[in-house]
Image 1 (cartoon, rainbow, N blue to C red):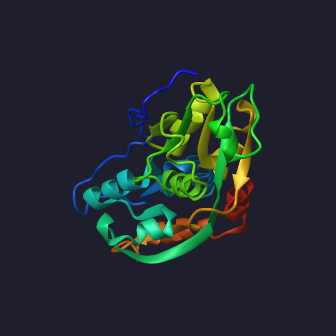
Image 2 (cartoon, rainbow, N blue to C red):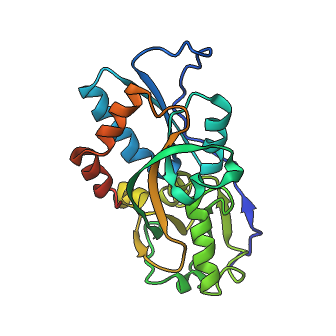
Length: 248
């Protein structure tokens, strides 16, 4: 097996660009939201359904949590951020929230490319596994969780020559689909979305800090009527069923 040094892959950010209006000039009937990239698919699905039933337009951006938190802080236009509550409440992110809506629990997954099969993380040390990818361990929720999980099994150091650090969960998923990596750590939400394009996945229910996914209302947007309408939809059975179908 060829040894590879640990690498950091160039970050890919999943962004639906939105217009930036001058202070006080944001158009009526429009809100701006952000989310961790690992929840792009269900969030977009919910936004699309919501906009079919409401005149309110929803624009969105996606990336690792540190990146989207910075966008929220700097733009002053994003009213809602979806992600891990612990991350949102981290004062170092510089964003304050007035309220939270619980959306579900996040779950870490070990997935693998087509052509191979795994039954445990310990098998990652075997010769058939040459490359493993996981999201950024400092900026992405599931990168942190994967690091905690592997460290708890005393696998973090032995696997260093195989590890490729990506920016986001969807980036890891894309490498699994293309076969560029043999295994990867993603969230259950993305694993469900790409299940027919990879070899399989193993749900990991323990070995990392609990991940509570919430929609955080950015301070100053609590009285926004359009945002309240979207929050009401997020709390509806229809939206809940979408999140549940993606493993939340």
